[in-house]
Image (cartoon, rainbow, N blue to C red):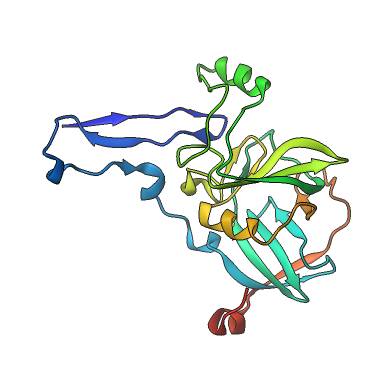
Amino acid sequence: MLKVASGLVAAGIAFSVAIMPAVAQPAHDAAPVVRVAQSKFVKPQYKRKLVRLVTDEAPGTIIVDTNNKYLYFVESKNRATRYGIGVGRDGFGWSGVVKVGRKAEWPSWTPPAEMRVREARKGHIIPAFQEGGEDNPLGARAMYLYKGGRDTIFRIHGTNQPWTIGLNMSSGCIRMMNNDVIHLYSRAPVGTKVIVIGPGDKQGNIAFQDRGIDVLRTIFGGG
């Protein structure tokens, strides 16, 4: 008989679910913990890819296309790395031009007070603070988005729910698979320009065209 310990699912943020035997077994025969976060798969179109991206934005710019669930890191003329992302659910989408104000590895999570109140009304109890780690909703890395020198409360971060990539699930933050956010984190320093395209068109005029997989770079390496 299996005992299922379910974690909280609230505000598009979930805690890991562990499946463990209810009856103790000898150490050599102990069944390993199976984390749901590690047992789900991401759709192929959201896997990291090298693409041909036509844009006038400077190399080093991040473009977040919330409509199509892609984040682009512009590398050079017609070259970018494309990552699959999860974005804000209905009523939590946004747009604008911001910057990476600070960064953190295995960040702790302090949910906004309004989120805790909002979710408590639904019967979801969110902790006031959670240490960083595998079970933390912010995943392996976080890039905190600032505008005018002030924290917007939005982040680009990892997730312990990789199956939500490609979906509208968050409270406005941009979530990535942990391997992808680690990859992006190493390339995007504090001060990186981030353009978020979404509801309200507050990002201003921006032109870009994804022309698909960069076959040569994919075959011979790069990025």
